[in-house]
Image 1 (cartoon, one colour):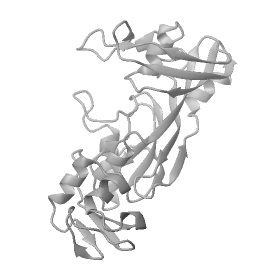
Image 2 (tube, helix red, strand yellow; image 1 turned 90 degrees about the horizontal axis):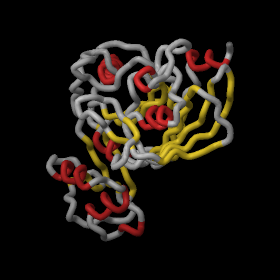
Image 3 (cartoon, helix red, strand yellow; image 1 turned 120 degrees about the horizontal axis):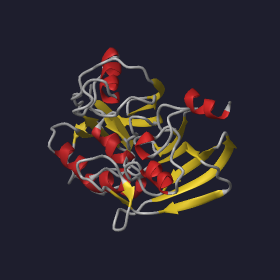
Length: 288
């Protein structure tokens, strides 16, 4: 189903070209504007077709008609919690153990497949476009854009907050600024190393118990495995993270959860905040 979005032309864009409003007023990417130009009838002014070079009139309604696109993932049912949904975004609380995208190791048992199934049950279809990604073992909030326009607008307009449980005792707060390298291009494993990609992690200690610390974490950069690598480098790997030296005695996956995402809605421009409570396996680490 096509997505139709209406915008009332503000006074400051009276007489301006459609392209100027799309790029400067709405903030649509050059690529999206170019794709709209290629589709007949995708842009209307008060119901009449209009080109990107045509002038606008203050108070008029500019309508964008975004064509539906078809999912490339095979629909397959899997459990996840829907936190929020509208015509533009789907917000999910992803369980640990569910990979994001199909790979040679995961065919059909991914969040992309689960979202395709979920939408198909509602008579909808969309390519799986996640704003950022979570490792298979990481739980928490995932934002899915339901069309190209939403995906382009979400890029760089959201902030994530995490809860991690690490081995060792932390108090106060701090920052880890250490570059991350990929020692072997054939392996996923990362490490701190000279000449690597700039990576900065901010942490605040929330709780200590059983030789573990619960930390609130925000990132300045989004490198693969950044949180896991940084704390392993300090000698305090995430609980359960056997890839980076953590013990699986008390939890069977790395103890990392995306607890909160703040974003600007790609169509309404409304500031929205989505949260997911800490899952039971991470809560139990502080009950014993």
